[in-house]
Image (cartoon, rainbow, N blue to C red; front, side, top):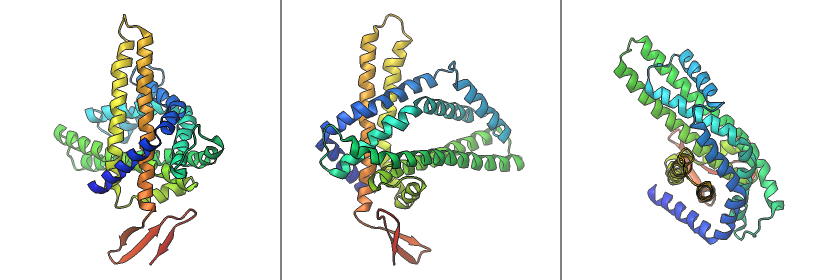
Length: 320
């Protein structure tokens, strides 16, 4: 697993460096507005006095209380706050996501398909990729909502069973809350990996919608550990850049006596770095798709039947 993941990462970095000028210009002119919006929206979402966050937090808290989750659990309070901040940030950055981010991904995927990208990019070749990416992204939103609902339903059933058996001690509640947080993280991580693969697959094949998500689920079946390992470095880098933005820009904003031109330039540079890693994340997803597209995936069904699953442009093909 480590060898396959390292090979895909090396190919991704090689492709990025090989077309460095194209990808960096794509990140600046297309992904950059989305990066600014997501960083600023996250900074606003951390402010509890914002206009939207308290309402979302209150609604989710009422929903958790009605579902029977222990209100005394500190872990569920933190989970509620993080989910509320994520929803608030997503609402603010949604227009930039549906435009600049998808166009940036389309430019990146088009470059990987052509092997010799043109600079500046040709929008006549990018626009046909935008429609399937948009369809897949909308389906990804519903898929993420379904994954969250599934995680919360499972936690509700577990807490209901535990409460019915009479285990109401603080130690038991803390242990079950920790297990619920881990379960929620695992389900959400797998859902995000599938969504990233669906975006790359829809761009490479030109078909979007729920079928791209279904193909992505089949593609990474029994390869989930590789997909999670590939997603880990980029997501850690994005989280580090977000923390750097909060430390260098947001914190400075609340400090008196600081000159704003320097802070603004530093914020632009941080947003540029964020854009670069968004492009790298797209390249890694495309290389992960190519690594299985070039060959065949062998999976065992019912311990006896062996199927070779290939991914043609229009449909699945199963051969004995």
